[in-house]
Image (cartoon, rainbow, N blue to C red):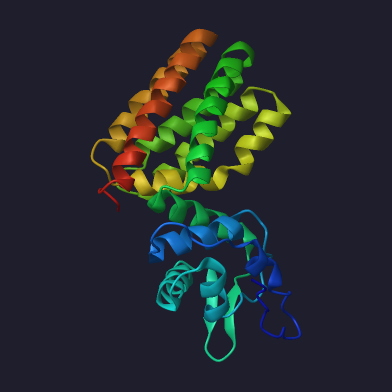
Length: 254
């Protein structure tokens, strides 16, 4: 089936690409299933910010679903700030790609999106490698900076934002200490994942105390210059952090 696009306005990109990329939804459709299909293409960079999406009718035909499912999915993505619905004009992918990734990750976590789960899995291994290398290469000054970040976490109290910021700083500092530029760049590039991850689990009981204990264990291994111990401590931290994330997604959503 050939799907034609709406006419473009002066500033928006052409829309046919998305309509051509979409395939019919095989199983019984739902709003979340349609939203996942759209989000998968948007987060993959297939469609650029500012692009006008095909009309509801065209999307429904391309996906093989009812227009009501498309309308519900677009409304959900609009609420999340991923697209903008302009009455009388159409639906547009929002500008501001730096803000898009956290929203896409959060939405993907809520829907169990495979791409996001893969990203979480990769982060687990990257952090363990980072801890191992840091144990081999850290100077006393490096360890002092890590301790400062940990102290900021302890001092945050009920200030969730301060705790999350200090937690992220700890992990990014650890990546810097590993002195592997590629590893550091990768971990910095998924900072949005760290932010979303920690925001989602911050109000689950035991998160703060558990996170502090787990970071302490990592720092103890680093001070001992114990690569195996640092790897193991970080792996344990990632396992517990992943468990808290699953709890958040499976019914304890903030």
